[in-house]
Length: 76
Image (cartoon, rainbow, N blue to C red; front, side, top):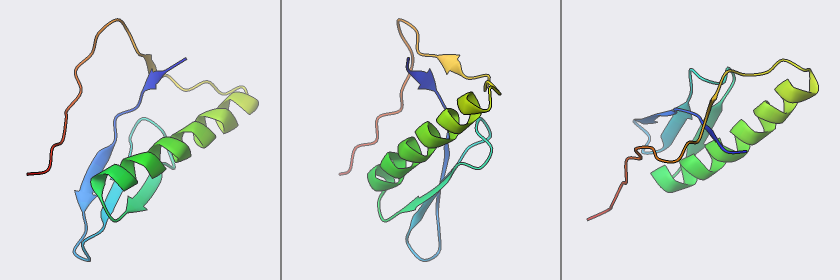
């Protein structure tokens, strides 16, 4: 089942990107590019969701529906 997790991406002064989320406590990911940061954040989110499910503490995440908006980032 796919779920929607909102992440906040911030460019750090060092040139790296940092992803955090209010949806999943403890989700923190850092990468050299937005794409790399999102890939790492996705892996961290999966692990955190699995850990919550093992403790039987369900997160209140929206399930991906028939349609949704997604911001597409394109380099120029």
